Length: 159
Image (cartoon, rainbow, N blue to C red; front, side):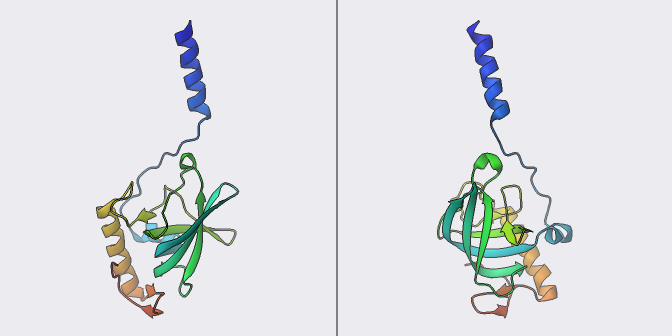
């Protein structure tokens, strides 16, 4: 009698527990690029939580799309991992892909957003390299990439 009750309780917990399940994004392409409103490489300068969202302040190193001159952008994501939140740390560098939602940049685990920290959970060197190579080629053709620190068009330089 205890086993069926235990199984029923575990099933109920599983049904009510939020979880994040993502399909890995396809190879980077023009279609993938066009899907996002903001693409930047930057360093995390502050983190906070407000109303169930993680607020990430990013010092922009290179802007690939959607931010030509701002040195700091604010990006929101869900606070919890079960809601597909991401967990950057202060001083880490990330490649952010974000959408615009009511004049706010938002991202989540199921976007192409990637850590650039080789020691971080979820680091994928090959995918990061492929994305950066695509962005460099794409932005060289259109002269869109901007080194925000210097305010000049540029090619991608890993720091």
